[in-house]
Image (spheres, rainbow, N blue to C red):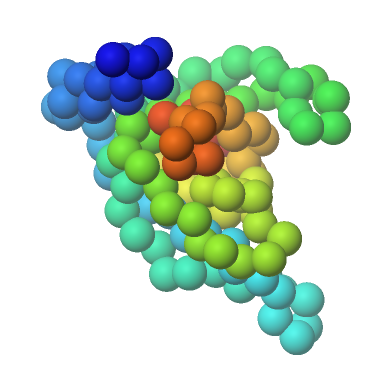
Length: 128
């Protein structure tokens, strides 16, 4: 068993053990821009996630210090949308809505890449 298999098994175990702690968040993927320059999204779908609502400082992609209000940990795979110019599998232009209606811009997306799939083993999404 290789290290990758250990990580995959660990993430699957974490998903199983934390199932009762996970909530359903709504996710719409950015898939382009309409003629008027308005963003275009897929329909919202429910995704199970661990949600930690806590203010914390982090550096965004531009190197600025920003305050995150919530961290979502997605333990189930998220498939690629395949849209040109999109960061996969979660693009910073995507939308998330928490069960209480809270939303915010995506400040950062983190995840250790699985070499077999090219996608993260799990995904952390920080909302502002």
